[in-house]
Image 1 (cartoon, helix red, strand yellow):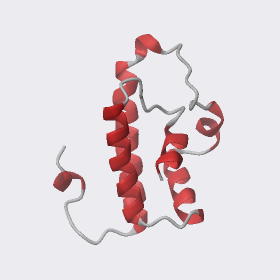
Image 2 (image 1 turned 60 degrees about the vertical axis):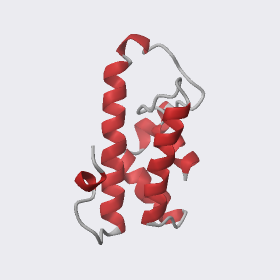
Image 3 (image 1 turned 90 degrees about the vertical axis):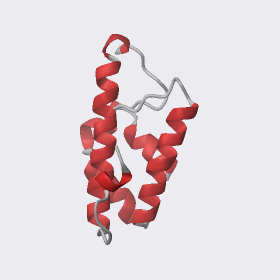
Length: 107
């Protein structure tokens, strides 16, 4: 996927960047879920069912951005770190149980 496909124009608002970031992370999670059906019993240290049940990812990103006063640039950098982190760690897999904590860790 090309950067221009994700961000076809300049001047996005912070809310739009949050929505785009959430969409990208959810797409990654969906792809990882398809790959990991056979290893579904594995539970890793960053996994947490509590956040999955209490707050959707989009709302979580909005709240983190609001309370930590993150800029839209920080959200983009967090996605870049997520990409680098996944390339360096073969055991890493982003899923709905750990996406909240990893995003907080990367920001």
